[in-house]
Length: 264
Image 1 (tube, rainbow, N blue to C red):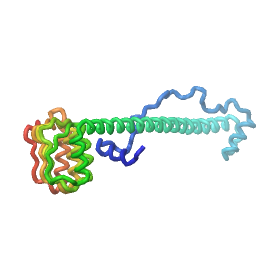
Image 2 (image 1 turned 90 degrees about the vertical axis):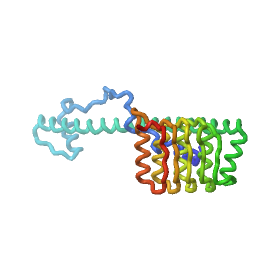
Image 3 (image 1 turned 60 degrees about the vertical axis):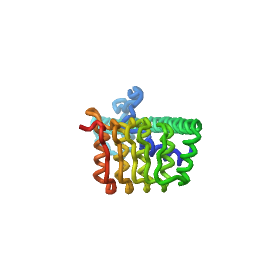
Image 4 (image 1 turned 180 degrees about the horizontal axis):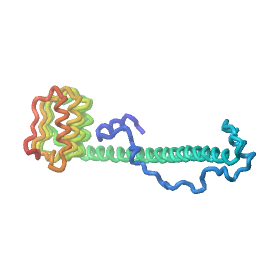
């Protein structure tokens, strides 16, 4: 597996390094082995009790019943510690299995996503050629390109290494929320882009949130237009809150267009 591709995929998809949240791991077969019980001091002979006490550096009291009670408490404590250790080892085994499954699913998702992007570019050679020019910094400083929601992801990756384009117009091309997230994350690496127009697409709360996160570290963007995208609803204001947080930290953005974005 290409680790560079995986890291790039994770960043564009907004996936954290932690594949599995430990809190989500549920214990399978939570019933402990019924045969696993504490040893019973009552079943031991006096010599055995003396031996078990001595093995634990405990002295006999000289009273068999008292020694038996002391040893039973020790047995119970040891059983409790062994039981917790057994449960911890079982959970760790399940965590590793869940992590392995999570990595496998993430790899499969990456392969599916990359294949979609390659297939889409193969269907539109002109867009594919333009994206190659963007990677090679062989374009003008202002660019209008009519990608779709799949090829927009390839465009976003190309913009990570581009240091020529300062104005990018992607308005009115029916881009979805997922594509918007990729485009927002251009700003995490690109330090040349000054203006992005994404008016009249189908971006939503997730893309808005991605822009907010990217603006926290970006130091070049001056103009952002999300006009006529439903980035906020009464039920979901998370994206708008994240955007506000990003703007609060960002020091370069001077113009933000949120006209007709569901904000009342």
